[in-house]
Structure formats: C-alpha cells, structure tokens
Length: 388
Ligand code: TXA
Ligand code: MG
Image (cartoon, rainbow, N blue to C red):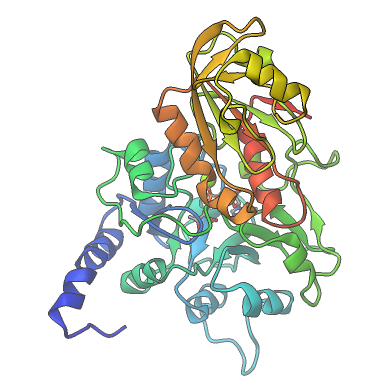
C-alpha cells in the first residue's frame, strides 16, 4: 500500500486509517461496507478482538465467522504460515476455478484450518475449517490491507435482524455498542455471499447468496454441486451452515411470504393498523389500476384485471363488505428483476418496520439456481407464515 501524496486523497482515506488503527489496537469492532452487506470486523488473529464482535451483536458464540482477506497472498499466509514447497499452492485445487471466476466477489469458501492456526479460536468455534472471502468492495479490501490482518466479520446487524445494506442500518442496530461505521453507501448486491464447501465430495452449497448455484455448476469440479442448506423447500437433510438454525433476517412486523404464484386473501390484513405489501413483479394492485371505490375494484376483479386478492380503496384497506379497516397501506414495488429485489429486500423490511407495519405481505420470486434462491432463502427465514 502506498500512502497517497495528494492531500485530498489523504482526507478521503483518514476514516480508513482511523478504522484500521482501531482494528489493530482495540477490541471494539468496526463496521464496514462490502458488496453484499455491511460487515462487523475485527482482527481475526486476536481473540479479544473477535470476542468483541460476538458481544456487540449478541451473537451465539457457536456460529462461526467469515474471514475476509485483501488478496490471495494474505489467504495463503493463513493456510501455510511457513513457506510451502516450491510450486505448491496451499489453496486446495478444487477452489481454483471458483477463485478465478468469482473473486473478488460474493463467494465464501471453506478451507482447512492449519495447526497451529494463526486465527483466533473464536473465529471458527470448534470447527476444523474456516470460511474465507475476498470481497469485491475496494473500500473493504483497502481497510483490510491497511489493518495488515485478515478481518473476521459477520453481517453488522443485531442478531436476528435483517442484514444491513446501508450504514444507517448498522447505526440503528448497534449504536452505542461500536465506535465507527465506515459509510460506503448502499451495498450493490444486497444479500450475503454464497458459502460453499469443496472439501467434501460432492461439493456443496451451505448458503445460497450473491453467486448463483448454476454459475458455480459451470466450473470444473463443481458440476455435481449439491444444495446442503435447508430453508423449508428442500429435502430432509440437516442444515450444514450452523448459522441457519437461528431465527434470522426478521423485522419486527409479522412477515407473510407468498411463494411465487401465491395470492393474498382479504382475511390476512384484518386487525392490522398498517400493512406493508412488497411486490416483486407479479402482483398488480387495485390502487395501481386507479380504482377509487369497492364497486370499481369488484368490477376489475371480475374482469380478471386484479391479480391480488386484497382490496384497496384510496390507499386504505377495506374488508369484504367494503368497510375501511382503518389500516394504512404501505405499498412497495421492488420491480420484476431479481437483482433489484435482492438489492432492496433487507432495506425495505427495515423501512416498513420504521413506518409501523404490523404485517408485511411479500410476493415471492421463482426459486431457481440463481440469485432468486438467495432471496427466497432469506424470505423463508424471515417469514412467520409461508403460503403457497
Ligand atoms: O456476505 C457475507 O458473507 C457477509 C459479509 C459481511 O461478508 N458476511 C456474513 O457473515 O454474512 P455471517 O456471519 O452473517 O454469516 C456467515 C455464514 C454463517 O451461515 C456461518 O454459519 C457460515 O457462514 N460459516 C462460517 N464459517 C463456517 C464454517 N467453518 N463452516 C460452516 N459454515 C461456516
Ligand atoms: Mg448474518
């Protein structure tokens, strides 16, 4: 790393230097942006620093952390602290095609923990492996290289809350518990990294995320990759990523998820003061059709023009008899493109909470082997009710 000479650049870099200094010298974690979600980082080689993450988040200590590196040299140094024999790469060959295709980017790979390990024991709890990721965010990589150590970092939300995709979300959850949040704007991807294990045969996906399984399947050695996560739609296999057994990604409001093609019924909204509706392309709304009264809505329904079953009148929700329930409608359209849905999903759940929604009805997206699998995985975990 070269210290820039221009004073304007050093001003821009001052918060990064301050963050790196905190990371090197204290046990208070620092929040920083990545292309997926904001992370809560600590020097992965120092136990007291890593314990600071669990304390700030209220995270169960048996849920392992991902180790973020600034480059492959840093990663190789973790795998083989003494120089390996000429020409031998300590990174297992199975990962080489994934690394050249997806790194830097939203992919986490499991690696064997060397003995003795340079990583703090708290990073991996009792596991013989550690998860590693080279983030695409230049800000994240610069922070890691200025710190001069790999950063253990979970998502920077309070445990069980939706992951943070903006600096404000981190402040909302962790204000008073941490000292510094680096603000890099909204995260480009919006859902966490895909976690893969190539140390077993066949290789498996432990968590769907920013890199689609179909893209991974296109890499040499990964043609037979299996799903090894459970989110209610898969087979009977036990969850392999320990984090998946905890309640996750949840706003305060009750989330009702409609699997792709599912339609809400009128009964769902009764008794609520405010109802959030998150559309992802399929549902049209009576309000969106410009209906102003119940008769008009009924007529539109009769002609098959209203896809969704709720009745909306001038922004209010009405019951089957056409009486206003008094519930406010908080209508959000994330658009039909799955990238846009992933990008906005966590922010929208948080925003609807802030606006006082009691119930959030979410329209699911078709669950394929792409980014949609990650979106639906997070929604299934956030939902207290799933309708098909
Ligand atoms: O995109 C991301 O991955 C974000 C950003 C900050 O990099 N980080 C993130 O970390 O999502 P976290 O702690 O919220 O989720 C880490 C996931 C958990 O499901 C955890 O169980 C799994 O990775 N994991 C980490 N190390 C593991 C290991 N050695 N074996 C199995 N699963 C592991
Ligand atoms: Mg998390």
